[in-house]
Length: 200
Image: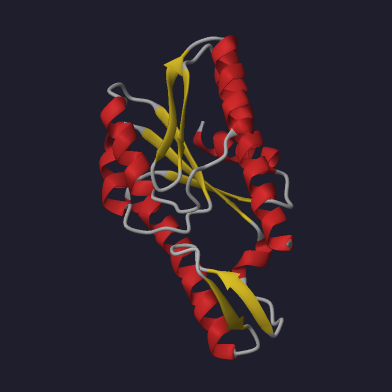
């Protein structure tokens, strides 16, 4: 359905942002690595210099099909902390519908220069009033009927969503890390440029 295509659009935007960052690192002659994660580490390409490496990274991004639909940001950060011994510039791209990563982020943030890039769709912020809708539970993959006409249901969903976004903003701020929010229907190029100008 329409929701699936939104997931696709988010994935495409994340791929484009990663490609943009990788090419900009290439022009600076920096090393570039890639860590793909869901609730597990899906793939890790250690940081290397050069065009071949960047092209390989972009190919991996385009072909990436996660084995899991779930997200565990703490797991990814822990893995990164263990493999990256030298200070690095780290971009974490996700929709950040997850919690329990603040502690790990603080530890990683002490050593590395971390920026969270939240890619989201404005439709996700509020549940539309569509009557009875079949939805899939992210955690259990179970299908269930949800009454989206119910104000309580819509309010709970909205609270769940906004709590996660607050947690993201809060955690990154407390760990001294930057954040960029990219909506899939907006230009991310301006956002990235504005962010780097402010930091530079």
